Every structure is written in C-alpha cells, then in structure tokens.
Amino acid sequence: MADDIRPLPMRHNVGRALTHDEELRLLKLAAAKPEWLNARLAAVVALNTTMRAGEIRGLRWQVVDFIERTITVQRNTTKTDAGERVIPLNAGALAAMLELRERAKLLFGVEPQPEWYVFPHKEGFTKPDPTRPMSGWRTAWRNLTRAIYCPACGHLQQPAERCRNEKCEADIRGVRSPLHSFRFHDCRHHSITRLCEAQANDSIIREIAGPGQCSSQRERAYMFLQRVGSAEYTGAAKTHTTSPRT
Image 1: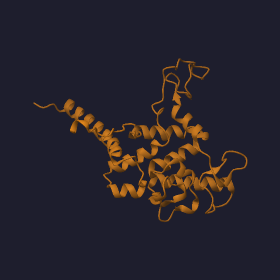
Image 2: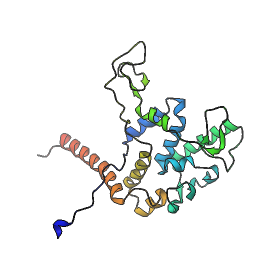
Image 3: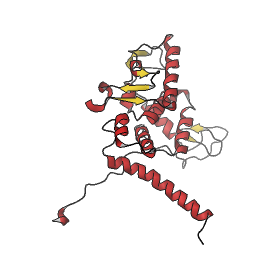
Image 4: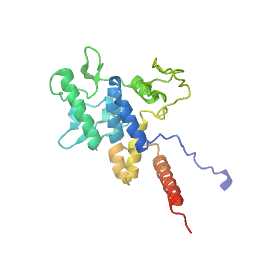
C-alpha cells in the first residue's frame, strides 16, 4: 500500500528573493529614469511591506498613519476577505510614503485628502485624477527590469543588437539584465523571505503579509533555505580556502 502513496509535488517556482547587491542594483536602476518613478516607489513599498501590486494601487491616504508609522490594508484591496491587516512602516517604506506625499502636494497644490489614492490615475498626463487609482506600472517595470548597460560605454538602454550610443555601437546581443526575470510580485516574496531571515515567527509573518502570504509555509521555507544554504556554502568555501584544516 505504501507504494501507492505518492508525496505531493513541491513547487520550486515560488518566486525570487533578491540578494542585497541585487536589491541595491534594482533601486539604483529604477532611479535612473523619471518615467520609472512610479515603478520605483511601488517597488520600495512592496519590498518593505509584503504588499501586493493590487493592494498598493488601492492605497488611499486615509489608511497611512505617519504618527504610528503604519499602513492599514483594507479588505476591499486584499486577495481574500481575511487579508485585512496593519503593516508597520520601516525606514524604507516610510521614506517612500513621505516622497509620495510630497509629490502629491506638487501635483495638486494642497495636502493629500484622506480619500485620495496614493498612486493617482493618469499621473504624468495633463490631468491626473487622485480620486481614481492608477491602472499600473507594467510597462515601466518591464523596461526597468530588462534595461542593460553597454559593457563598452556604459550607456543605459533596452536590449538590442547594437549599442544605441552613436559613438559606440558595440555588439550587445549577448548582454542580459540580471533582473530580467524578476517580476513585480517577487518584491512581495523578497519581503517575506527577509522576515524569515530575521527569524520572525509564523504569527508575525501572517499579521504582516496576510494569511495567503505564500501557497504554503513549505514554499516560504524553501525560499528561505535557498538563501541560507547559499550563504552557508559560500561561507564554508571561504573558510576552507583561508583556514584549511591540518
């Protein structure tokens, strides 16, 4: 009978968590072009709060508490009815929210109203509407994560056969961004993985990320072990190289 019992398949494509250097590269790259501003700010929020793209688009100023440094994710923006939660704002998330508030003041000339959306509809056009949510930043995110630097001249551009710098025109067909496969939803996976690395218990992770933070605890643990295992292997290799046993 035991031969007839098969273990449940374990999904390994649960998302991607960035290394520290990759995270710095992403944020530095996102700041390189003004048209990537929304994608950058949304990514900073997601990387530091575990929030989904839909939850970020649905954010209104009335749920942002700068005194308590929290965001309340309401049920109408969550994936499930049980997803309402209060998320603490760390330094990175708070800085992003302050930048968004200052930007709203510049756009509309007054303090953001409680019912306004943090990411207003049609921002960048002649008449942005803060009473409607932004549709998204998919194009900006795709261009951001696929952008490459020419190895010859350092010009930032989208992948092509030749460098777009007329003074260079180097062959860049083999150049690929290390962030090419990083989805926006992976920002959430990255944030949850960081909570695991900080040894947060399951109840804290559920309070911050919600009950549907991953398909299962096993998947979240798999991502965590990938990071820890890689670090332990690297550390062991360095120890073996620098201090061999005698």
